[in-house]
Image (cartoon, rainbow, N blue to C red; front, side, top):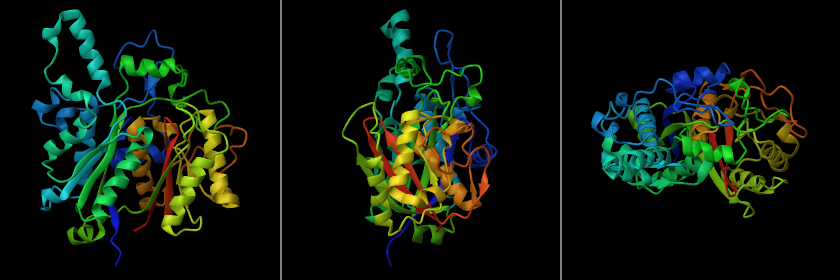
Length: 410
C-alpha cells in the first residue's frame, strides 16, 4: 500500500487565541484579533494597529533559563510546537525521539529583539549586550529551541520562503516521512514583527491599513474598501505522522496530506502579475498530483487584503477551476487575524484541519462590498456548515512565489 502522511497535532499561538479550542472558537464566531499596538509607543506611526498575541506567558512553555534569552519569535515557536506535540499525544506515549524531526521557518527571525539590543548598546555601551542575542540572528534558532525543549533528536531543518514558509515546511516534513527518514515531523512557522524597526519597514512600504480608529475592521480581503494589510505575529505548528504510526498510537487524525506544488512568477520583488497564471499553474499541478479533477470542497485563500493580490488570486481560481470556481466556498482567515508572515499559512492549515473535522467553513469578515471581479463565494460574515472531503490552501511570498497544498479527510 502507498505510504500516507496524516496530521495528528495542532498548535496555534495566535492573535485570536492560544490552542486549537480558543483559536477555532474565535474563527467560527468571526472575532477579530486586530487591536491597538501595546508592545511599544506607536504615536508617530501612520499605522498603529496589529495582531498581537495576548496573554502569552513564555514560561508556560519554555524553561525559564531559556525563556530569559530566547527571542520572541523563538518563544512563540516553542509554545506552538509544545501545544501541537501534546495535542498529538506524543507526550503520553513513548516514541523513538530519533525518529521525530522538526521543520520550522521564519521570515523576520529575531530582528525585533536585535534592534532593541542595538538601541540598548548605543545608550549604555557594548557591555550591556546580552551574549545570547547573537543566536537570534539565525533563522534556524527557532528550530533548535524546539528540539532542545522537546528533546527531539531526529532530522531537522529551517525553511524560509516568506509567507509560504509553513506550507513548504510541511511539504519537506511530509517528504521525510514518505522517504522513511522519520515517523513524526513537527512543521510550521513563526514570526514576531511587532517591533519598532520591523513594523516601521512595513509602514514605509505603504501596504498597511490605517484604520486606527476601528482596528477590527482593518483587514478586508476581497472588499472594495480595503486599504491594506493588518500585520500580526504568532506561531503555528502541526504534527505530521505516517498513517501507520498514528493508527498504532491511537492518535487523533485531523486530515491527510494529499499534494503540494509551487511556482514562481519570476517577475518582481514586490509586484504581482495581473492575470493569475502562475498561481493557477501551481493549483493545476497540485490537482494533477492529487488525481483530482477540480473536486475541491473548500479553499482557504491567502487573502491578504491587498486589492491587487485579491484580484490576482480571484483570477487564478477562475483560471484553474473554470465555472467550478463559482461553486467552491472560499474564505480568508486573515480577515480576523491579519497577516503573520511565515506562520500565516500554518494558521490557514490549522483552520482547514478544524474545518474538515467540524464540517464548518470559517467566514471572511469585513466583506461588505466585494471588489470588482471578486465575485466568487468568499463566505462573507458568517461561518457555514459544509462537508469537506478535499480542501486547497494557497499562499504567496514576496518575490512572486506561490505554494499550494491539498489536504483531505482521512
